[in-house]
Image (cartoon, rainbow over the protein chains, first blue to last red):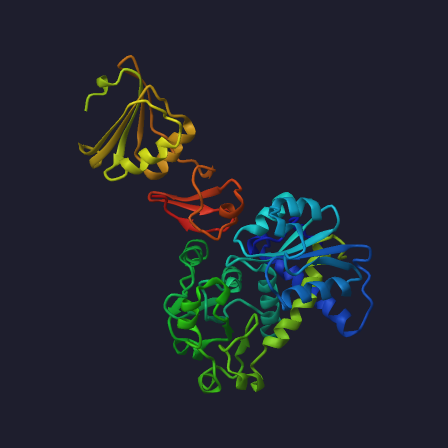
Length: 310
Length: 142
């Protein structure tokens, strides 16, 4: 069955649940090609631009790895030094130029709404690889995929999102997507780093979901099927504010004693100190497997938006 | 209040008490020039209890400005005066979406750094709640 996708992925709401389930299936196929060490050919002759105005390790590398594994090539920048951006070029002009050189663009930018601007000015598909504290839809796709692979469903799961929910953009996209699939949500964050009101409002108004809200992870850890941790977003806080929050919540083996034996511990990474290193040896700690899943999922997305996936 | 005092111009009526000066600030950015402006604050009102009112001598506001005022004052009435007579009375209604008019309140929004025209969906009309189409921030203009 053919399913029609929009040109761009700016917001997780650009994808319906059917789109996401379709991408799960394509990602399964991509995962098999990686594990069978097959040579990718789907994107031969195609070029991906990775325009990263902000630092990134996993997202940029996994986009680039995904395109290489599909047989395509990659150009781009990982900082604006040495580009016309440092001369004051607007995002719109950069995009209009780069879109002449490539077949698809992945962009990360510090300003919220920047991916929408890019999509409006680009003639080729644009993928939002993170726009400020707003959204990170490809992280959401790989998070959902990671949960789906282990739990085989999303509906009815209890998902606890913990940490900096104010600026942790991955949690914004993820909570909306999970609500759409019928998961139950619990939010635990220190006072001042709570989930933005507009997300809570959207969950209530559009999905009839009232999340459990607490300032301490202990309140919900025992009922959670998924424990999704996030770091304090230092780059979006003043230094004094960051110091106030640093180390204010840490997931430890002691805390995990009350967690379900089959709970999944996820984290979009990078980790700072919010998951104690001792937790890495717990079989429930799946954040590096989660990071791996970013490659097949981004392969699926690139191939689908380019219309080469059959 | 005697609208007859104004020979030609606009009377902006039914502004909630306390919003008159804010509305005046907005209007002053619209090249009113040297024309006379009269502002009434805390006037008794059957509709609002108390209200503010602005009279603009020889100045007529356009539809875009009327919409803008209705974001701040949902009950606003615009009276167009010619030769001491009200020739047109407009109660602007909020559309479902608006473009431009006001900046996004989110300082991290791309519209604030590179000057793209703002676009909002109106999530609620009473009280007015706007949702930025770029950053999705929701806020009440005031």
